[in-house]
Length: 171
Image 1 (cartoon, rainbow, N blue to C red):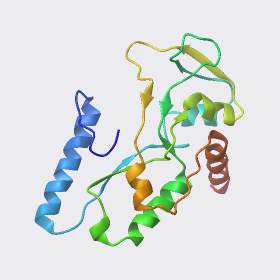
Image 2: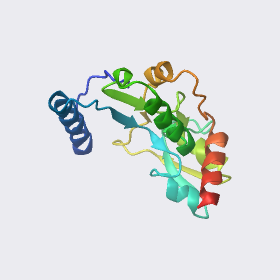
Image 3: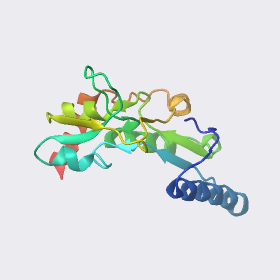
Image 4: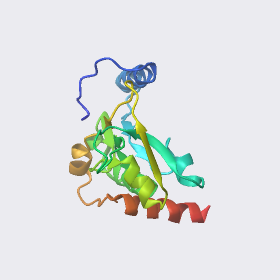
């Protein structure tokens, strides 16, 4: 989804996020400040996959293929915590006039969740996805790349996991 993606049916959570974006836009018209709503991807180690990465034993996730090889779990947009900090730093260095109203913040290439688990040296148990599960939720980061062209994102599962482990060791 890019920043202009039309929103159809969405969850209550999605509706509340859209209401927040609309409120920020309206507030910007009255307070004279520049507001940017960041649509943030999953941050490695701070998302629903984090418990599986942190605990011993295999991780169970949904599978969206009927072929046993190669099995594929959910495809998601991710960003490392280090890259998120670099994005925020880069945005703050720009003149406010260049700040967009809405900006997707994600690594340009989506990652399969099972690839992250495997990169963390964990076994993956793939279970058939229920009918309500969504195979792909990704953000188009093209505008972010144009806004901050010198930013080189960590884009592979091993690089994302290495960054997460490095930051975890600092804690």
